[in-house]
Amino acid sequence: MYELFFRKFNEKISLTEEEETLVKQYLTPKKLRKKQYLLQEGDICKSIAFVEKGALRAYSVDEKGNEHIIQFGLEGWLISDLYSFLSNEPATYNIDAIEDAELVLISKSAHEELLRKLPKYETFTRLNITGAYLAMQKRLTSIISSTLEERYMGFINLYPNIVQRVPQHMIASYMGLTPETLSRVRQKMIRK
Amino acid sequence: MYELFFRKFNEKISLTEEEETLVKQYLTPKKLRKKQYLLQEGDICKSIAFVEKGALRAYSVDEKGNEHIIQFGLEGWLISDLYSFLSNEPATYNIDAIEDAELVLISKSAHEELLRKLPKYETFTRLNITGAYLAMQKRLTSIISSTLEERYMGFINLYPNIVQRVPQHMIASYMGLTPETLSRVRQKMIRK
DNA sequence: ATTTTTTATTGATTTTCGTCAATGCCATTT
DNA sequence: AAATGGCATTGACGAAAATCAATAAAAAAT
Image 1 (tube, each protein chain N blue to C red):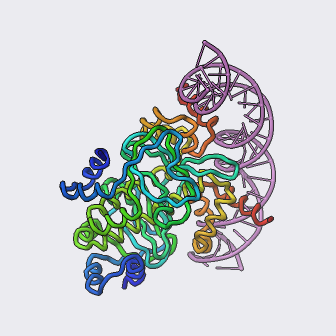
Image 2 (image 1 turned 120 degrees about the vertical axis):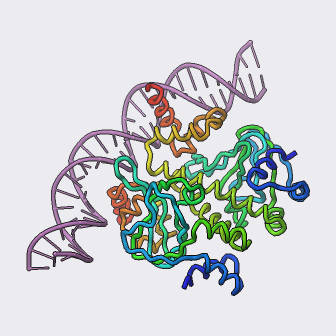
Image 3 (image 1 turned 90 degrees about the horizontal axis):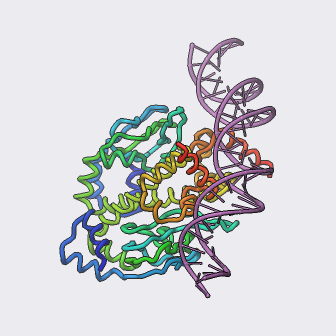
């Protein structure tokens, strides 16, 4: 149980047996079927989810009903509406399962207690958010400074597994494009 | 000395006198004239800078020589090429002063020692990076899901002080637009 | 004081991307 | 086996933004 979670944890900062046992008490497993929501816009985000298995996405919906994917969550990644989680304000994102998924949930109270009780958990949290920040900064840089082809190439190189598993219109959404435009970008690249 | 730095620090997590004295020993002041570089692409980023006074920007330059601003740094903000700082890889961003500036530098070794010695510094760091992450996520969401006018309105509301002090072509660059396009967006908005 | 540099605006044109619509394909479901 | 729904592709068209170029205004340097 929670194998991948603790593998990732120990990669960042290694825990003793006792510490693992302590942390385990604060975790809750959850299974999600494809298309099921983990969080809906307007609800308060009650937990951070670690993906043990499967795939999720976080997305917003605009007035026209278009979905905009802000984040994917595959095995080994964390996913949540962090702002809602930390502030207790209504979520602005929806999160649902792209594939059947197994999650490890960390509730708000668990998160806060672990931060207080276990310094290594704070380090774990800091390293996680730092990694997420750096990844997002790369994404932002590529959006404001690269051509579509370069951006798509970058995406393929960075997340080859996502390209395999996720429908292309979702990748288009993640890139801020229409499915048609992404399809045409791909055609151009194939011709070379 | 370092007044704003400690004000911001204490807002996040309050320090005792002794702790402040300890932290002070790890800080270095630095003044920068307008247009001076704090960091150039290709160099290793040796420190995180806290802006006590003035304004800076971090930006990349593409093959065509166009500059793309990834971040502004005004009073009270931190600025650096975090990836380079943490990994010791060559920086991909340039950082320079938009106005004469006074900085507080935290070197790599200072950062690491403070993380080890002072748990409150780790908390300070965690809260800073979390805030930066949330701000960037908002920016990204607005890029992939809003119209230009909405995005510019959002920028004005979020950073009215930047609009006052920074040339518009830099704001265009931050938004991933040409100066001409931003100028036209503004005209449209004025007409309403 | 005048020259230079930086900045913002405007117009004409081209390129890029979104929109709308139709088609075909594949995978489920019935 | 047939029907359905989700998905990717393609074409025609229009809208949005980039590019190129000229001008003017403001700020900085001499």
